[in-house]
Length: 205
Ligand code: IMP
Image (cartoon, rainbow, N blue to C red; front, side, top):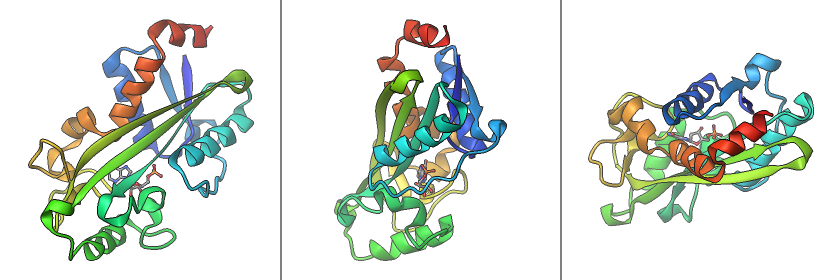
């Protein structure tokens, strides 16, 4: 089946394609980029699921009765009351880059002791289909935040984040190891568990 991804981010399309291929799901991920680009969406719903739903509905409005996958994700830090959360991309201000967001996070946590630096990445997937069908899935990657960035791979907050049971930051682990335990991989696993293979086949027909 064709699954249209409500994102212009080709890295995400590659990542979800790899997850589907690894799991043997009969799914072809097609980036919004390949079908005229992602319509503009203001991510102001205040929740991951609300923002992901807005993205899914925006692309579906363009494509008609297609199956659309949308995701929204972010970093939730216990010492910041769950922030930056849905504001992760713009934590240091609208359009902030990864370096500015990391600098702001390090400063915000500078007085937080080592045993209070728990955080998790969250990814919510909204799978929207013909006739208003909607399925929601969530994946989390729990861990803790370093004081100094480490590593050079990945993006976003990866250099500060050490997943539970690991000693390396996500940016030190590299893409293959990260994709085995990331919040996106876990959200995809939840989707696969919720939509068994026959359901994928029904969606194709
Ligand atoms: P979005 O889901 O693309 O809107 O991502 C929101 C923001 O959350 C990103 O800009 C990053 O700052 C952060 N983020 C989401 N996933 C990751 C990840 O896997 N590593 C590091 N940062 C992430």
